[in-house]
Length: 254
Ligand SMILES: Nc1ncnc2c1ncn2[C@@H]1O[C@H](COP(=O)(O)OP(=O)(O)O)[C@@H](O)[C@H]1O
Ligand SMILES: [Mg+2]
Image (cartoon, rainbow, N blue to C red; front, side, top):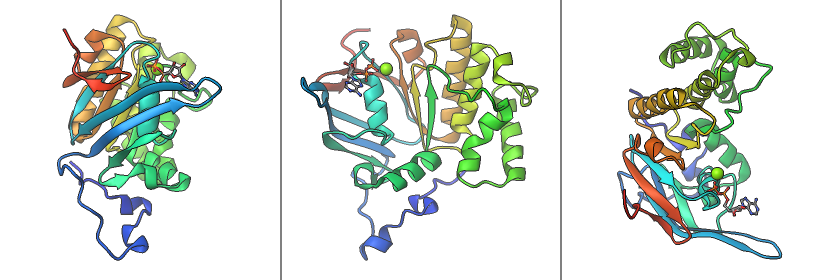
């Protein structure tokens, strides 16, 4: 177990900006709180992707977001990650409003508080497996010995204890995604965002990856969002929500 890290640990300091204490979050249990989120892509023909997305996740909550291709699942994750800007609405993580942060604070917040898993793995081909997994620790300044110890423990956890010195090209798709999960979780992020993580995997590898993702989110008490168009994948989460133009809601029928 580890205590929830505050944003002051990444240099974000409310008191420096105001003498008042930070406001209490609306729902004390909510670690991630999304309210009335709307996104329109501008252009000659502006595209309204979704409106009024609400979502509350507490520690250890793991939710699946399903939706048609093009319904905005990746867009939603990008907004929650602070990689893109919403047109309306709010996103708060541990009581801090993301939309109020500048780019440097958002980058620091992403590095310390978030972990990402993508369909295409995004493992760096010229680094070995251990170096890939250790990358987030290097970015937040964890020392080499401590990082090496944590990487070795994490690789053992994901069943790749003897593959630290392998190069990515020597690994199967399922193994690469387990490396990606190890990398996403090595710094024990508060929020884990997975975008179609099993989209490129065979059935058995997908099963292993989903089981691992769930186990690690629960063990770390993180909040997790799994984006998928696969119902069987979605069923590995605690609950399933459907994304449509009018928001997130429980699916109409099983
Ligand atoms: N950067 C962008 N600019 C304009 N339109 C975009 C952009 N990114 C995505 N879209 C459009 O927004 C919609 C939602 O895309 P996306 O979030 O990728 O959906 P999903 O992940 O559910 O398949 C799609 O119609 C897509 O074409
Ligand atoms: Mg997508």
